Length: 517
Ligand code: SAH
Ligand code: SF4
Ligand code: F3S
Image (cartoon, rainbow, N blue to C red; front, side):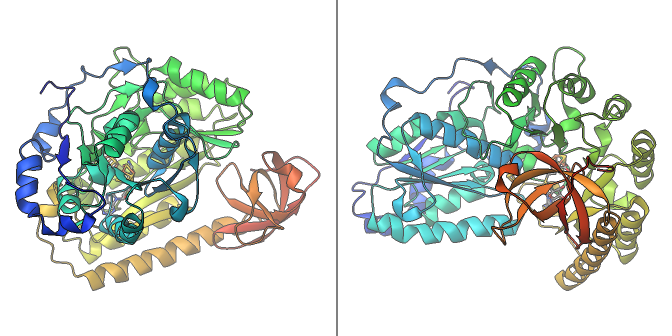
């Protein structure tokens, strides 16, 4: 096999797809041994760390194979998405591919001819949700053997997951990884016509395919990938294995995409990457996220966000450009993970509590009104009470206005998963509760400051709870609900804040321009 070939291209001989029950009689270990393990390479830290910059190819010549262009005519697809914005955006690409093949989207599994689960592997509960859903899909497949069920996204990149599906859920028709989304048309064809399970997870860590079709969710806000993968290898994290090495798109391709979105009337773009601050490091010329944002801020689009930032790579050039303001919003999501330098060290975050505070100081100096939010993991193996308290004090010291908080979840193949852990789950849960109480308190206090103020809100649509209420976000990412005409959807309007809640603000349309944001 050459490097571009499949890590895995397994074909399970289901002699008769209409007789799925037969599968129960197949000795799955034998089957996996025969077709699967011989060619599958599990994630390997040593190998993964030896990543080379060079061999990323950028392709501009993607097209749907001629014989697949109408294969979906009269048929429907449904994609369920789990996990982060990157997965959401991958779903938009898969929806684009399926639409170009003639398929229409549906919300109902009962109507679907193709169901894809775009999965997340970040924590165990994310994976459990997917296995639960796979279980729900089985009766549907039994009723309708022509239904094609595919598993893609981050879980497909894990050996243990693929083995489990092969063993316990042989009714699944295809499994494909995060690097070969563009192969969806061909894989679908294979799954349809050969009546065999297709497993394709590439060992090559992904070229960049520039011209894939996309069906974006909505026409107000858009996601734009600026880079793929992650080379940070935090000791708890599965992402460097599931998403491959860092690969930056070329600045001109990103700028062109943002210009195009602006011309289409989009009001906001979010630049995406697992570690956007590493943008440009792998390019053959000196170019950073700061340089990219300095170009993008000149584009006529009201709001530009970016996520996720890694503190280690957040450099002065970026701060200098962000301070120019304009469409670059001063909300920064800056995951800290822990307030203890000792824990940060064994997490391999490569900064200390003091480094983090110094960075926050620089950001605040350049952008006095910046809102900071974060991610925190509690109960990292052997985290002491004192170390946890340091997280609590850091939370206060920085004044985070929101935080995503998680109990550490061991992930197969990562270094931390092999460590013994002397902290009980009860203690971890109790810490999480205390942390969450503090997060809520700080969020509420930040919200209360807006009472009586006027803020600019990008109106996204009707509120989920009440169709008579509109909702949208401020520049600093605060959710605002207010009553007004639906004609305002898609516009940035001033709203006077009347009441602060813990996670949202209630207001009324104001006539004057916003005084604060
Ligand atoms: N690239 C981003 C985050 C990606 S994952 C960053 O580095 O900040 C989103 C969040 O999930 C992480 O910030 C972390 O807080 C959490 N997370 C990742 N792996 C985890 C694990 N094994 N257990 C619990 N939380 C985890
Ligand atoms: Fe995971 Fe983020 Fe660390 Fe990368 S930087 S390994 S995505 S937590
Ligand atoms: Fe989950 Fe993969 Fe995103 S593991 S958080 S979907 S990069």
